[in-house]
Image 1: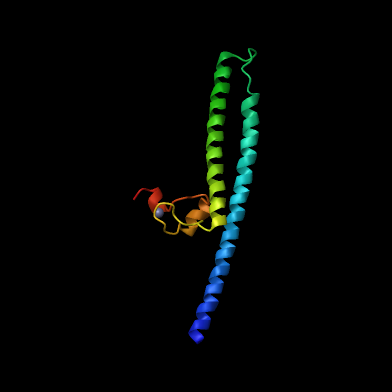
Image 2 (image 1 turned 60 degrees about the vertical axis):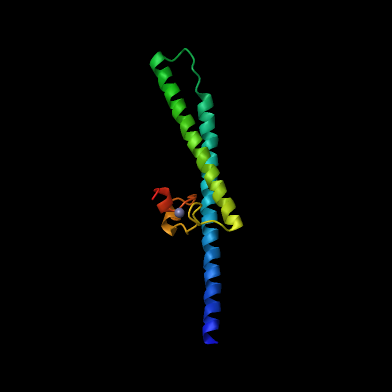
Length: 128
Ligand SMILES: [Zn+2]
């Protein structure tokens, strides 16, 4: 009887910890999504304001084009990351967050800490 009580208490504790962990990563991901959205917005304005008018020399025009290219590339990467973050938030809602999409094992906590939008575990990410 004692054992059953302990087991039940442990399960409740475990569920609470899981809930806290879920909320923690949800907050983290939401903050990350906000940051990315803000960056994408300001980045978008930046790329639009570059105008190739004749008042700047040929070299600086090339510089401007290059930095515009880089800004576009950065924006593309941020948009991809935003998609991953949004997907991770969806996984939190449906309860599949933290599991590897390839092998199904749990993704290590420290990996999620660094990259909360990770979809696969470190073993699968490294391709081993
Ligand atoms: Zn895996």
